[in-house]
Image 1 (cartoon, helix red, strand yellow):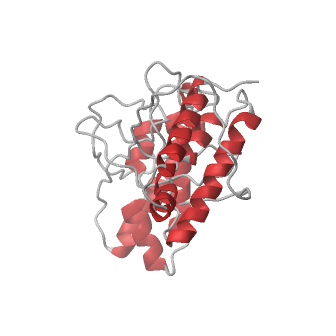
Image 2 (image 1 turned 45 degrees about the horizontal axis):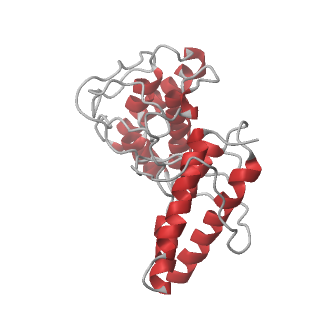
Length: 267
């Protein structure tokens, strides 16, 4: 069993990152490079599909996770989730296939919305919780990516309405205006259903029943929410980074560095 073109592309990119760090002028620079430059997230994002042979991609993936963790510990830096590389136009994106009642974009933003809602609820006091919900619950993005053909309203509308009502109530409680939150951008591996001229901001939802219209104006802003990463089970996604590769199309393997790190998450 082999791997897809997208998975192979990410594996080659990871191999090149390992190689580049190995050419650092000294051991300290090499360690720092491993901490800041290795990108297991792209491998997980593009390889974690049933049609890819896990034996082919899991070893280099785990090697990169382990090497990066050890390197960051050595240079006393936090492990920062790498951004997912963009695929060239001639390589099919496995995330472009809709497998459920929602498009990949709507699914992504719905999960991010739920995570933000949950995180706001963990505030130390009622005022902190309401402030977080008022200023951080991106109902505009939820509407923009889900209020489109191809998305089953039964799978997202109730959550959107609950969030819009909660945000309106929270703003009233803390005396803050209901200010539009710029539309979040999608990571590279999630196809963007919005037109290229999609707006940077949209009118804040003021009703618990009406769905905000899909925005139409300037450019998207950088996403402020990252999905949690689960090793080998959940594909990791993140905002855009461009990478150019010059390598053969054959699958690659990277020697395992140290022990395997079984799981990690970054939010």
